[in-house]
Length: 298
Image (cartoon, rainbow, N blue to C red; front, side, top):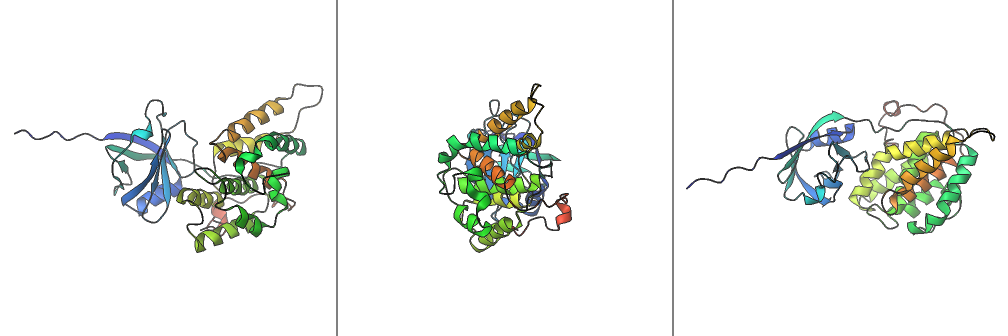
């Protein structure tokens, strides 16, 4: 009797950050599939670290391996079967295998000082949608976060709110990203996030915990950078066409559109960082110059 022919794996390639590349190389073996959706498949390693396989039209999270294929051609929601990391750092999920083809840069860098008029506009933009966050602090400029004592703010927000990643965590990620982009002091926030996650690893979901840690390491998504740039762009003279308002509207719409609550929370956190009363730190040193780069969140 003839044997059954072996099924050839569906081979794909993707680009990943240095964190993802190092995590896969260090921990070959079985992994847990946290969930597969059309644009994303989330995997938890034995160490508790979380990485994701993402289609090209997904939000390019810093924990993601970005494929060249969009979800409408290749939905990840159909992926089933056991998952593992092979010795060559390839990600296997059922009959699918993803090879790392290149490293991508996800580090956030200093971009400038936000313009007061742009912050006023963003505060007005956010006001009608803040209730979706379901957070008691979500009121007033930057959700009131800029006026809160850092440790208290982190304790009040971490793990709180709705969403695949709790909206309180997303707000903190936006605040940390804004601090990085605008040169504002957020060391106290990052230190408190690190303290809580070390003492209570399950204070939030494993996915959200990983995104908080990467935010504290100075990493983020392109939509944050684009809104940051728009906030720092000087307005045009009153007697000329102002492209700034168009860029700001487009960037705010793109970021707030992410997920059900994530984008609004990230934007709210950025606004909080921009309105912090602490003096700018001056030229921002690179991620590598910061030593571990985790700001107490490792």
